[in-house]
Amino acid sequence: MAAPYSIDLREKIVLAYKNKKCSTLKLAKRFNVSKGFVISLLNRLKETGKVDPKPHGGGQHPAIDSEGEAFLKELLKKQPDLILEEIRIEYNKYFKRIVGRSTIDRTLKRMNVTRKKRLDGKTPRKIN
Figure 1 (cartoon, rainbow, N blue to C red):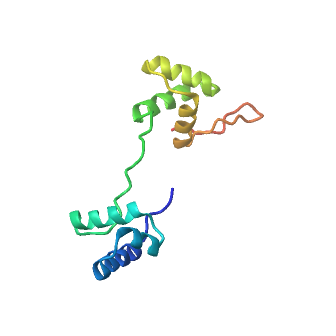
Figure 2 (tube, rainbow, N blue to C red):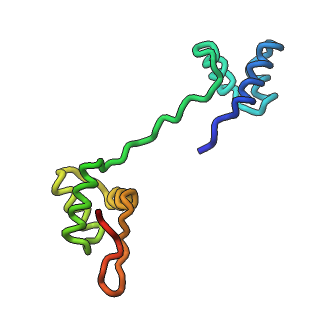
Figure 3 (tube, helix red, strand yellow):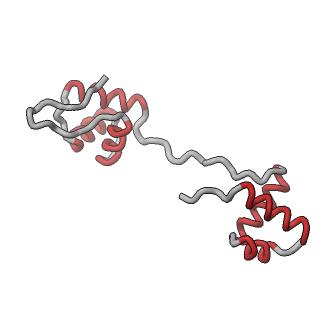
């Protein structure tokens, strides 16, 4: 994802607009930005009085919450040799909802639980 335009560039665009009163299209070409950006920047300035970029929206929340993580932690304490598909099946049965194998994998990574097996049969992960 691209970073927002700098405050310096935003201020230059606004200053050029106020000084020369040229069109948004000419400003866009001059500063190598889109016309839509110039329009939204000027609208934002009118509405809020600021040219700062909007904060990040936050993205999508994880499909498995802290209760689900606690379940997975207990499940892996009891049965540390389960493969991802078996973990997924147990999770879906317990919570009566369907999540994919990749969701389980991402959750385990977020919990710092590895799924590699050692040659001596012991599991290298530590579940608190």
